[in-house]
Image (cartoon, rainbow, N blue to C red):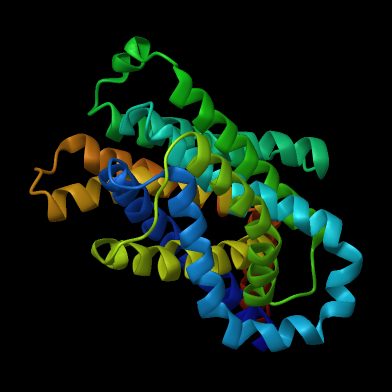
Amino acid sequence: MEINVFKQRTFWLAFLGLVATNLFWAINATLARGYMDEVAPIAINLFRWLGAFVLLTPFALRGTIKNWHVIRPKLLPLTGLAVLSITLYNSLLYLSANFTTAVNITLINTLIPVATLLIAWRVLGNRPRLLQLIGITVSIIGVLLILTQGQLLRLLTLSLGQGDLLMLAAVICWSLFTVLLKKMSMKLSPIILLYVLIMLGLPFLIFAYGIEALFFRFYWPSLSHLGLLAYLWVFPSIFAYIFWTNGVQKMGAETASLSITLMPLFGAVLAITFLGESICWFHIVGGICSLLGMILALVSPESLTRKFHRKAASKRCIAKVSCVKD
């Protein structure tokens, strides 16, 4: 019984971590769009991870050295994960904000669960369950209701441009990172794994920053952007990546990726709370669909079978007791 309670607690802590992750990322996306005229995309991503690396060093350096015998044989695949997550995903997202609308970015980002499901099917051999497919469908419908303000026909008028293609590339990078992270199953704590990924991803970011500064746009942080950077260092970088890694390890790549559908819901709540926008029926219905989709995807056939057998067994016991009494 104690083991089951521990498993349930671990599961729900991972679930809540994924919810918090998407809240942090929703705020990150909002800030990125708001500051894009003042900062350069590759530069802000570089200084974001440099700050996170410095903050993590007192907590993760000793553990990294201690576990180097585990890390060293996996340096090549870990470098691949670092490039996909630390270097490419956020750089592509920040770049796409220069060329496309916020609606298109959020819409394309909701393709992450589908892309992750397909890649996991191919790489891990995880055939999608019926409830997973239904859950993803319901969640995406909820997202589309929020983003189109209840008018789904608006999707027919959306067109793909340069920024949309960059965002599609970002979606593929993140989905591939999530699946490969699950496949590796590194026996490292999430904080040490994040520290190693930042360490391996920073050289590629520095190289990309040099190209951006020389040929496109130079940016160096100013005091006026200290608040923005402080938020980026702590919440969407350190906490979000630790929570995401833990969620993938405890709940699986497909289920973790499904939580991405909560981002538009949080975006709507943030707009209503801080921008004074009014709440409408599609916010409520879309939010319910997103949450319902996640719940459906979390339900496993094994758990349903166990519950059915427990109920059947309890009924048989009651029937036996009543027969004895008679």
